[in-house]
Length: 288
Image (cartoon, rainbow, N blue to C red; front, side, top):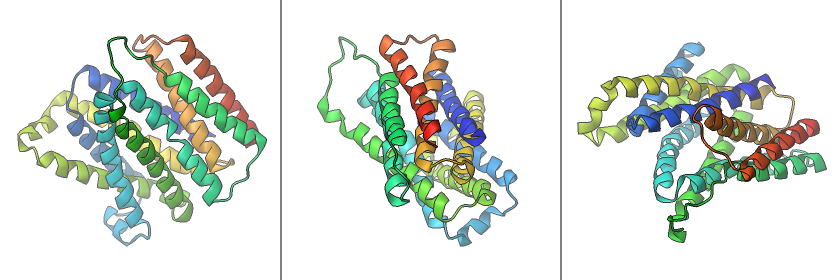
C-alpha cells in the first residue's frame, strides 16, 4: 500500500504545481516539456540501464505510443478547460478511471465481488460529486463542445489501460524506473518538436520561473508514474482496485489542497463526494 499512497501524493502534487503555474500565467507547453526532461533525467539516474538500450526492449513500441499520448493529452486538457470548461474537463479526466478498471477486470479475468463492485460504484459517485462545480449563471452550456471532454475521457482511460497492459506483460519491478524514464524521454522529445514549430517562443525555456516550475512538475510527475507501476507490480490487491483507490485518493487530496492551500470554496455536494470517496477506499481495501 505504500506505493499506492506515494502515487496518490505525487499525482495530487501535480495538481498543486499546475495551480501555481496557472496563477503565474507561465507558458504551459514549455513548462510541460521541461517537466518531461526532468522526469526522464530522474529515471535515467534511478536505473542502471543505458537509455539507448530501450530500443531493443520488447515494450519500446508501447512506450513510444504512451509517451506521445502523454504530451498530446496534456494539451487536450488545456484546450478542453478553455473551450468546454474546467468543471466538465475535470469530471471527464477523473471519470476515465472506469476504463482501466473495466479493462483490468475483463482482460485479466480479475475476480468480481459485491465489495469490489460497491467500492467502484462508490468511487465513481465520489469522484463525480467531489469535482462538481455549478455552472455560472452567465455561462451558457454549449453541447457542441462536449466532443473534447469525451475525447479526453476515452484518451485518459486508454493511456491508463496501456500502462496496465504493458506493466503486466513486460515490466518487472526492477524495470519500472527504466520504463518510466523511457516514457518521459519520448514525451520530452515530442514536446520539443512541438515547440520548435514556434521558434519565437524558444526563449521561454530560459525563463527562470518556467524552468523552476518545470523542474518541480517533473519531479512529482515522475513519482506518479513510477509509484503507480510499482503498485501494480507489488501491491497485494487487484489492479482494478489500485486504479480506483489511486484515482479517488488523488481527487480527494486535490480538492482538500485547493481548500486549504488556495482557499477555494467547496459546496455541500463536494463534501458528500469526499465522504463517499473515503467510503469507497475503505470498501475497496476490504475487498482486496
